Length: 146
Image 1: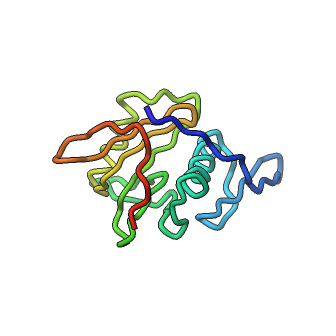
Image 2: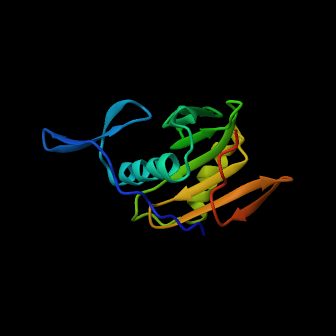
């Protein structure tokens, strides 16, 4: 398991028509503040402010093609050469990070191969490095590769 210490939240939050919204600095738009979005925004802040990953190399909720299906990954980090490097799947805190969730991430990985795969529900975080065709569990997120 990866131990995370999230930075103090610095979100812009607003309420409209009884719904809360958070401003996503990567997507540059207001999005509904669901429990999963809360986890996603905290993880983005961790990547930006704790791990110092460049914001220009993060993509959030982009569509990928899985056979006939169109799906959206949560967070994709590109390396310094703008190649997909790390894929992160975020779930709300109530969702257990079980084999089903890992299988979802692995399906996304088929469409978008990366070196690192990460699952988080805000409370727990697991990660793997794909090395020699094997998934090797990691205990910390890697430093950003330029």
